[in-house]
Length: 234
Image (cartoon, rainbow, N blue to C red; front, side, top):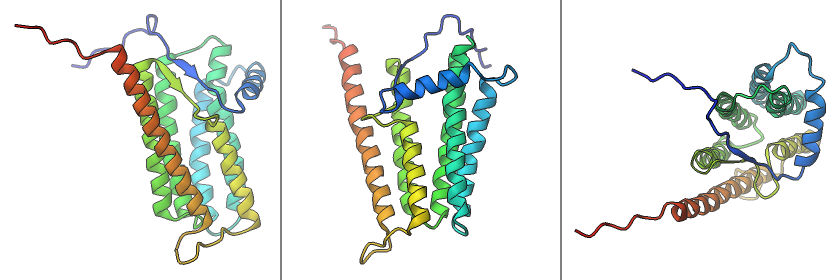
């Protein structure tokens, strides 16, 4: 029989590590928005909005296969996703309504589902080769898993690497959408891939490298904290 979940009163939330380029500005904007949010809207509403928006981003990329309007819609829904995904935690903190375990769990389940729809949409868009989109998705999930495991083991939740976090990644996607409205990605000579595919593969390689470096660094830190015990002499 499953044991009931205990109260969060004694639970120690993880330390958030966010050092992206836009962190300072983003925090000020989110606080400004949070204190002006209507009382009838809470963090759960914003989390659901973020999920709906990311599913809509994926659908918009699929639509872009048939009309460039899909690229415009994808950019709009990325902005909506930023609003919901970034503001839900800030709103809870401003109102003193933090639920650290619930919030961490639900936020990241929503993130995983949303990212799946995002890359599926890119793979169906005709702009990115499906196998490239799948490679990028796998690399993203690898890094996400490492972050979640490190959060549990080390008590630190790292949201950015090398100055890049979720907000910066959304801006990269928005810039890509804008560029695709102007010009189609150039094909690579002698290949079925395009320059955009090559850029996505480079991004996947960067994510995979970050995963490897972070995993080695965290494993070393944990080994030093918990060295192999000396075997007792019998």
